[in-house]
Amino acid sequence: MKVLIADDQNEVRSALRLSLEQSFPEITVKEITRAESLDREIADSEFALMLLDWEMPGMEDQRLRADVLAHWSTIVLSATPTSRQQALALGAREFVCKSDPPETILHAVQRLMPGAAMR
Image 1: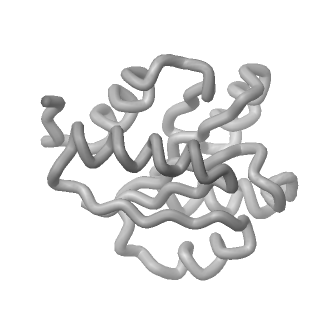
Image 2: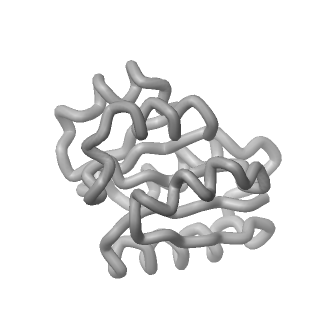
């Protein structure tokens, strides 16, 4: 399965990629750093799941947020726990606070990727 990580912070993307690849060796990960790239990626239906930084520059646009969430099975990542309600209301499948332990994101991915087994 293919997963897209959309986050402007290199450290976050690297940590997510490493965790995902170690826990789910059957997935392939692609990274993007800019919200402007999402329009191109929406047209590319090869990805099964997106991990989306809710505060990534350019994601403030509610239309873009709603469009992304309408086209993707999405786990929203946020440094702001108060964003949970808005993200879920717009269609996010899962919400994970960036301060949560790494296992939280791995469990969210596992729930959205049937057949993926944790090591």
